[in-house]
Length: 507
Image (cartoon, rainbow, N blue to C red; front, side):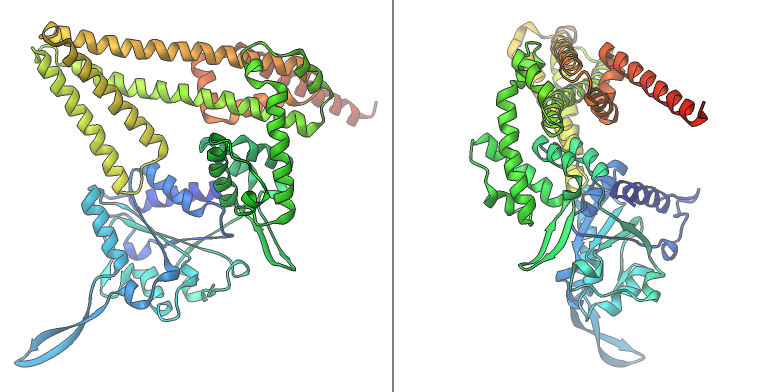
């Protein structure tokens, strides 16, 4: 299965493991809660999906790599305790709490979140001294004399032996206590993740042309050559900073992330060509509705790779702007809920000071929520931006009320300022929507004229459909160009299907 299917299975299993009956007891006893074992090649996103699952379920996450653990660090260190039995004095060996289990209690204490996932990576690479204890842990959730707290689900991960010399293959007794999910690298699945996490279009456009380069393993005279999803994402991150500083990108830099000489050479050459397309096509002019005539002529004579790259660059810019608009609409929706709460207190509050107190209390609540999720290791980048935007807006609103001073003494006067600042934010959002819709229209107009006989319009409509932000934007604010193109493409597909049926009739 691909990594996204694995994520959905894990999310469903964790939800089921945490279900309780009417007495508050877990429906599936701990001994029957089989740990999940993700088995797949390195760098395909096993750790990343655990962070997503924890964030989406609102539970905590504690991650550990088992490769560095010895029996002592996992089970605890021995110490001598004095005991008395039936009048006889004894020295008895005891063990301190496992570092791993102690980490769970620390997260629960610091975050206040009592349920979560214990993710143990490289589980099949444990040391020889620790291996016998793993069977007891996987079945009974116990390290030494200490068990993991109720409400914590165990998910493990590991690589097949062909990728890691340290792998110890589990015997049947151990495997029979696990839910095994075998995961394979899949570019189309990763592409959705890449769009949502801002992977640069230089990378995704290159991989659209060379999908077989997405995940690549081979033995060469120099040793093992490898390319992973992790490598592409990390390369994208450093490319963003190199672009920001106008630093040259060469094979030495790319080769630090992509460990295959052939792919390094091809990507570096493509990267240079990609930046040349940016300059030659004048992308901003196209999206602004003033495409140069040279762009049309070049598009019509360009090869498939060039056309796909140009379309990718244009869509990357547009989808980034769409994402900003969606973030603002979500933020304003959350902000409106707070303002409705403030309005509901119009009979209770009388002074501006009470309004300020309410806003500061809301602000503190946002900070506490963000801090709680961060300490539980389940704060997504999306949620972090949302909380920070809310905190910034509330701070600015309080400052505005304070700056007005004596002119805003009453509740009504203060609320007027609150509403004005909110309405200004709504007006800015509406202006952004208008601008984004115009730029989307300009993109459709360019694609229709420049690639009249190609499949680029189908690619554009497909990308806007499958991208979560753009599909939400179109559903909420509409796009005549998208609707028209979708209907035309559906009609064309139907006509092709009819032609095929006629040919099969052989008449």
